[in-house]
Length: 412
Image 1 (tube, rainbow, N blue to C red):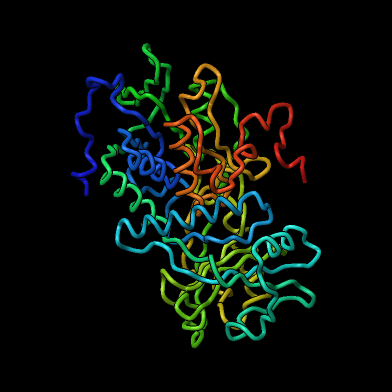
Image 2: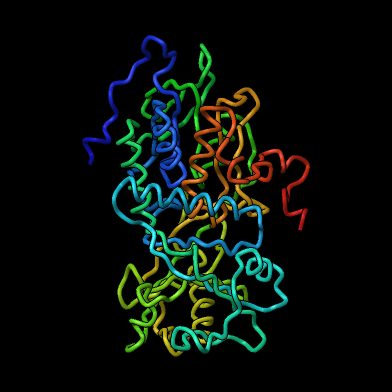
């Protein structure tokens, strides 16, 4: 694999003004999908990663992510449905699976408007939890509990990123890791010049920036653009399943992914990647600097909140008293309205630089859809796939924050 990822000797040739048609900066799930989408179009694509490929310092690593269509904001439904189709296409192309199907359970107080909207948008059916999954869940009287039986599941995160990188290489893309981009400039003959900290320069017609938690820093440096994206230090927790309950909580047995809209806002996946353990974690975390993390801020508080939820809601099936068995650090990049940024950078760069950022803790599942959209914006100047799928990109523009620091949140 390492040999196949080596950067080929690519030079501008007759009929081509630049070494590359598209240079993608950042090789997490979004960048890897964008590189694959560009290469699949026949574009000469270069994917640059600041750290090692498949590193654990950003937002795309780990064993599992949830895919669901239980979204309070209906604007995301066309995108997740497009993504689900593209996940299946990629699995068929590579010959192995990264998505394990599972139902999705949404639960919380009936007074929670986001929960009610998510249930309605997904067409989820109300369910008596005492009759499902061996009574694993115990919730307060009067809570809304609804299940989406189809369309959800668990994505194997790192495996999925590796899949799209391998497929991109198979389509002719070049991939280079340990290549920190420090400058993106207008080229002397058009296009862009991308420079790395080691002094390398790459010339491309277009550039796609998907650098996750580093987006604000990089775009401020290269273009003076201030994006209100705040990285958060988040924590993934795995808890021991009580003896005798292990099989009932597995994906194979039909146990769901789940989201609890109470306090704390908890999510979880069925036991899958680590036998005998179940992933149950909490949304959010303290602000962090991606270049200066202490890797522990807020961990004790988050662990206590999740343990309390387990004792109240899954005490008969999951052991909380001894604390989590495994703790894994991650980051999410929050916008003020928790909506994505998918847009041309504009200014002096016009449509030569496309930005995908601020995925706010719910973007991984959308990777193939976002990657396809970013690649089309770079190559074509527009995203026909988004139009055909009913994805309205106007919600994700950078200028929504102009004179309005809360962006789309003003609409709610």
